[in-house]
Image (cartoon, rainbow, N blue to C red; front, side, top):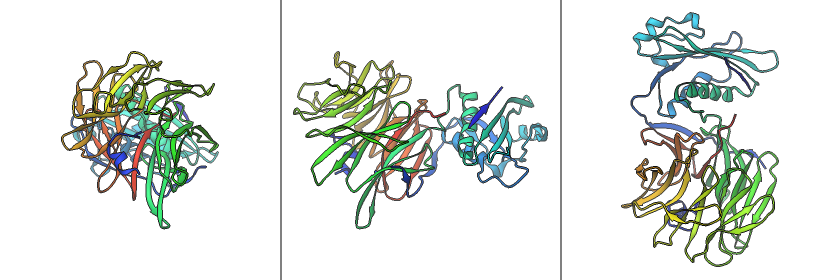
Length: 436
């Protein structure tokens, strides 16, 4: 599509307590529900896109509206409340829209381009100025209208927020459901909002800890073989389906994390005794041990600059987040609040850490500002796990477990919450890179 414009293994988190998937269609898409919205968001309306020929097979305006609404940064006017549904700037009565307290309006159309696809034009209108502030044109293939809608939302998002939108990103997650007399585990990749799900790997045995390569072309994950009493850490190419086995050593092979340059994995192995963090060079197959102190060290995550690795360790008595240099030196403790902290994830800018904090009788998602070490609790619990920052750092996806295990997102200020659910258990989300 062309645009033209002027992990958990050892500690007692909720995921572990409940744990002990060749691309093919997945069974169902996640259902998305916005459960709590923020105040003070940018007022905007996206009018239905016009088409002079056959009706469009997808309501792009609604998809783009849902994208923006889910961020908590936009107050998107419901279609039933619109004063009109223009598709061209010349059709807009700005005074009527001002009366409706709409500051910004998107109008557009999609026409067949003669090649089986669509030429999409849209304008972002400043209602109070009474003019177009930006005009765009997209060319999309016949099956790319959803991507085009996400692109529209990305362009609007970047115009107002000054950051790239994440609406073309993908997520990976694991489902577990009863099927044909037994459990079936699936590793699934979908659009960020749960649409277009595809099963990457499927097994009767557990699957854990999916992790995206920085370019979004591969997934690392852990697959179990219960009958043989072993686990293996793998890297799977999503285009070809080819699987590369990284480690199937005795004991734990788990918690893979990609280096920012995509050349190495940090992982947890226990074949020498206690679980430790290792670095595996994907080009040379060289394995380097990074921690070695008799404690349980696991759940590594790389800083965006590749110079540090944060990890979970109980070397102080309870699980807490520590940080070391990429060579294993200069280990320092990072968390002190709560009874325990684990499963850390760096924000894309490296300024924050998301983690699971245990306090009182529950596990909740916390965000630590690394500049001042202040921590904010952003989820409600009581069994929240596996936090992953959005690729632009503005939201966090996590697993919300209880009677209905599902995924959820929350903005980093905790104000906007979205639930992504389907039948069966859904767990261990991993948010991929931005996309195009």
